[in-house]
Image (tube, rainbow, N blue to C red):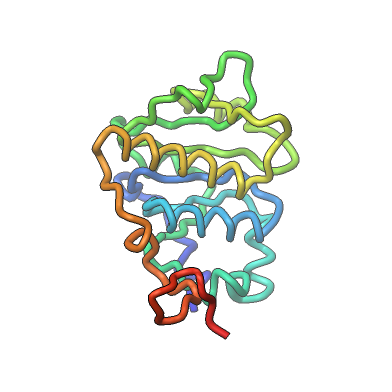
Length: 195
């Protein structure tokens, strides 16, 4: 079980790993857990979480939500702290994922190599100080607002696909894509489910 006390750490310069995701004052623990899952699925080594709302839910339980605890996404470091920008050097590009008038459309957005993706809370936007730290702004081309975990997944999936198309990450055949057991029987028919 992942210790919540170990997650709370003093933010040190140079402690930030990229690409990274930062959730600013998220409201719901299940969205933080979903973002954690997306980070693990798409090779993002750090998830930063600010504020107390979602984290207090985890701490009250003394653990992560059930599914994330069972999957044990140990390849993602979860860091709790409000001043996450201080952990990253000048070579990092903070990207605010926010509905803004001059935001770049995710469809044509070119992801920076050393990106820090910053997402606001479910019930509001990013504050002025946070936005001043961001160098680029991107908007997801959806007809309605996505929930926080879905927004993180959409951005990280787009990053993965763009990097694969550019030859920066390998494209594996379907049978080599997932690194976990998906419930298929050991037969020649991969569509046959285990009972």
